[in-house]
Image (cartoon, rainbow, N blue to C red; front, side, top):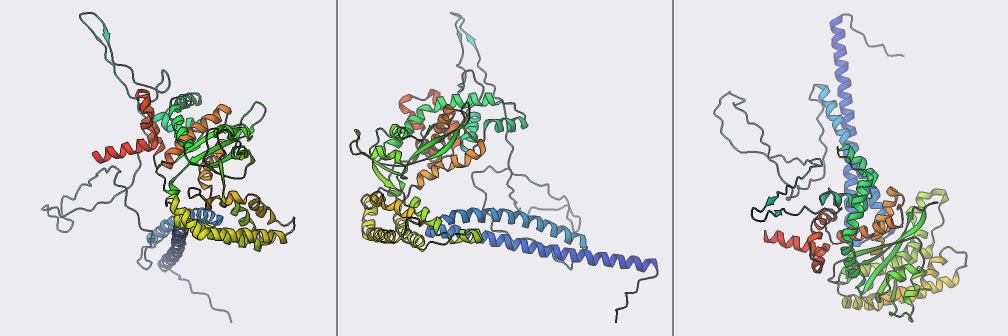
Length: 548
C-alpha cells in the first residue's frame, strides 16, 4: 500500500510559511552536517598532532632506532600540515552554516587547538588602545571609571623595508693654509659600491643558505620595487667572497687542526662548455662534542670536477688524526703507513653498514611495495637487531669524555662486537654468492678492523652522521639551482657553505653574523680576525647583553 502524499497548502500564506519552515530545516541540517565535518576534521588534526609529539618524544628518549624514523617524522609533519589547514577551513564553514540558521538549536563549533606557546620576549610590543565607551551601555550614564584592562596579543610581521641611507660628509677648509678636510667615505664591500652590509648578507644567505638562485632573488626584489639585476647581485657575491676569504682560511685551519674528522662527499653538476660535468662537494667536519671536547664545531667544504684520489690527498695533506668516512678507495693513500706526514687512522661508519642490512629487512617498506615486495631477509633482520644494541649503548655515553666512553665500550660493547663478527662469518659461510645479504656482510668483514676501531679509542664515533648532515643542504639545494655555473662558482659555493654551516653548527644566525662581519672586517686588525669567527662573535655578543 503506497503512502498518501503530504497535503500541500492551498493558500499563499500557508505555502509561504511551509517554504520558510522547509528552508529553516534545510539550513539546520546543513549546519549540523558542517559541524560534524568540522568536529571530524578537528579530531583528525588533533590525533595527527599527538602522534607527531609522541614520535618526537620517542626519538628523544630512544634515539633514531631505524632509517624509517626520520621518514616517519617527515610524513607525520606533512600530514599534520594538511589536516590543520583542512580543519580550519571546516571550522569556518561550520560557523557560517550555524549563522545562517537564525536559531539556537545547533551549537556553534570552536575547534580545540594545541596549547599556544607564548610569543618570544625579545619581540617588540606595539600597544594599541581601543577607545573606551563614553557612556554606560545599560543606563547611559557618563560617570565611568577604569576597572582594569584585557590584553590580546596578535603576532604580526612587517614587510621588508628598503631604504636609502644618505651619509653626509661635510667639507671644511682651513683659513690659514686652505687645506680641505673631510671624513672618509663609508666602506662598501664592492669597490665604488652602493650596498650596505645587510643587503649582501641577505643575498649570500638566500643563495647559499636557502638555495635561492640570484635570478629568483632579482625577480622578488623587483616585485618589491627595487631593481637589482642578476649581474649586480653576482658582483656583490664575488666581492663578499673575496672579503670573507680570510675567515674561511681561519676556519680551514681550525677544522684541520683537530684530532678527528668526519669526511664525506656528494655530487654536484658543474656547467661546462659542452655539457654539465658531475663534480663533487667534499666536506670535513670537526665536532668534538660527542666526546666532551671543548673546541667549537665547524664544517669545511671543497669543490672538485671529479672524484679522483688526489683531492682528499690535497685537502688532508697535513692531517694525521682519525678520519671517519665511508669505504671510498680514494682515502686509502691517507692510511698508508709509508705516508711522509704519517698515516691517518681510519674509522668506518656503522650507520652506513646498517643501512645496507636495513634495506633488506624493511618490513614497512615491503608492505608498501605490495606484490612487488622482495622477501624479508632474516639474516639482515638479525644483523640490524645486533647493530642496534651497539647504538643503544652509544646513546648512553654520548657527550662523555673519551676515557669514560672507552671504558664503557670495553665493558659492554666489546663482547657484542666479537659475537657479531663470529655470527657474520658463520652466516656468510652458509650463504651462496648470489644471496643479496652477502654484499653488506662482505662489506663489513673485509674492513672489520676499521669498524672495530671505536673499541680502542673513545674519540671515535659509531657513525659518520655529522658529515652526512653537513652535506644535506647540497642534496636539497641542487634541486633548486640544478648546477654550479663553473668551477669557480663551485669553489665559491664551498667557501660560503663553510661560513654558513659553521655558523649554524654554533647556533649562530648566519645572516646576522655575515652582516656584522661585512660591516667590520675592513677596519678590523688582521691579528685579531679570529674575534670575528662565529663562536667568538657569539660569545662577545652574549657578554655585551649580560653587561647591558
